[in-house]
Length: 413
Image (cartoon, rainbow, N blue to C red; front, side):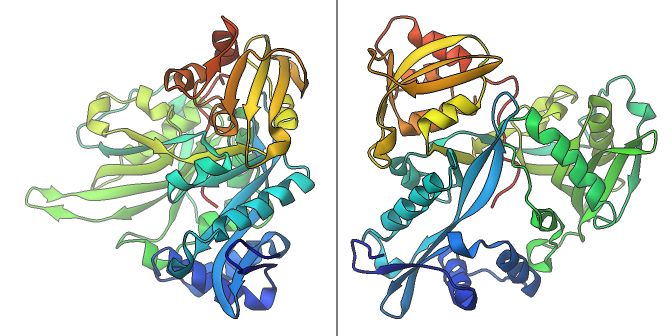
């Protein structure tokens, strides 16, 4: 398959992986990478969904997709193309290489029957033109645990927290994670092999911190939560000044989650707890004595694109009854363009082509942003991104598109 620039787009072959991956690493700054990381990345790569762009014998572009399943409002877990490993050589920018790769990836996702595509954007400005909208945000915090205290819920003292080697409790931790997936839109059902990603512990990425550590929460002998973290000792003029960096935390109930946070706040010689990539409604914010000293900030995280508007909007449920006709603009995936009638409620939905008059007009990017319940259609309309054509339709649809909890993509890919 050729591109607009005359380069040729081919499916990646296993024997080309090292060269392909070296190109990708260079495009993202050329940082060090362990043999373990490379081996794991190769084992997870879906070669039939990975692309290499060639200019003669020069490799000038990479991209690929993972076959994921993503939780959507209502608890369904929907096939999703996880777009990944996208790079274009600096010598071949603005020549249509990226556009050709995205064209192929989305065409393939449609052929595979995947209603959704998702990605993490290294440069967010790039992906709007391909119909991806900012659908989830992440919470970042740096907590002064020497001055911030926790008020934990009743039952927390009944939860046991113990250290465990991360690999020894991997199966129990994955069971906790899997149980949580349907509860929060945006979470990914992990495919076999992906559980190994959480245990990668290259020294090059520790920044002087400890090896990966793990504790599990237990109730009646059953694992009900876990936290993976690192510690870094520090000393100032006034004494100890260590830092805990949280890598991952999940729990099945409020008491187990509070027990894990209490443990992290109370590690000896540590005065700061850092975290990133957390859901914006993370529970600890409602347990702390002084949120301001936690320095919470948010930023964009996961981007979502509706590959098949009808199938995607039919796959989720809606907080309140909704009956609305969308006029969808989608130049990059023209099979989505036109009018769609969505009817739905908390029990289910259907979305079909219609010739009826449109109630709301928007592009595929706005549908992607609002799909998981993160971005409000009302907010998008205030920015001029959604137009109301029938009075009342905007509020009706905006409320219905909400989600009981904030959507969250828990890890990159």
